[in-house]
Image (cartoon, rainbow, N blue to C red):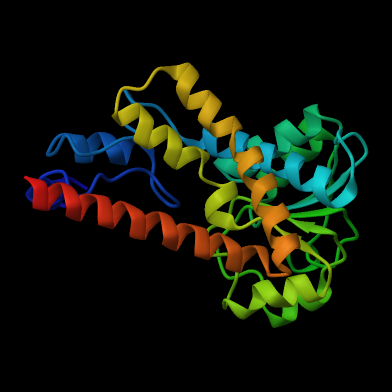
Length: 258
């Protein structure tokens, strides 16, 4: 980790590293001994609660849009993965009255979810076919593929996992099945929002408001996808590419002026 920190330092701030799957706050502390271009240290804080809060707001937005319900009470959620983010998402959902079906490769995490949330459990390979209103993938990526999509018995897919679609065409496949998909890099953006704004020394209230705004962003995206009759994943990609192109143009103009 310290060696990695020395490499990050050579980039002079062009890249800021942070915690992700498989790393811990202690790892970020080790990196911080070699570079200041790191977040998620003991001093900066864990981004997982912010990721979980954004996912919860996104699920609420998806339920309102697809099911026409303003409350999660009684909504059935099949949650895949009970790591730092997944367990926190489960807590938010439980507190809002959702009924949880969970799985994880670690039986201790499953037991904890049963005890804390009264969750029902299924084997990891059975989670896709579990009858639910929402399938919430909170593990690793590429879980939405030809085999798993055919098994889904839900109206919504909304979770924290990165790169959920095994291939871009699977967004269209979900749409053809009438399943509303909350694009992963939008619904799980809460942690990155925290990392970026905390590093920029933004006040806590500004960070919290931005994370809560994920639901509003998804609402607008769902409505645009409906109007244009396109997969939500495709609309999200178009929006992201437009933002990146605009930022690049602004940077180029600033560089030319300088």
